[in-house]
Image (cartoon, rainbow, N blue to C red; front, side, top):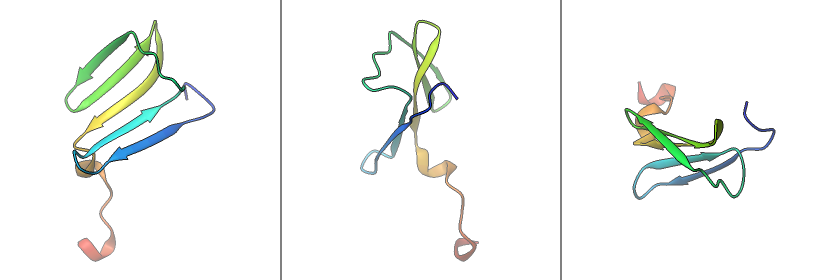
Length: 64
């Protein structure tokens, strides 16, 4: 884990999950792979943004 603390925010309106390993994030570079954006400060991972996060949620037994 890049940090001992994690900040998580979810924007339901646009279905985007933000995971930050430091506050403020202060990323100076980002790499996008599929629907995931990795945010870096130098070589250190400081955050992850997941676009379309609902597709990754675990389905409950009642939804099967």
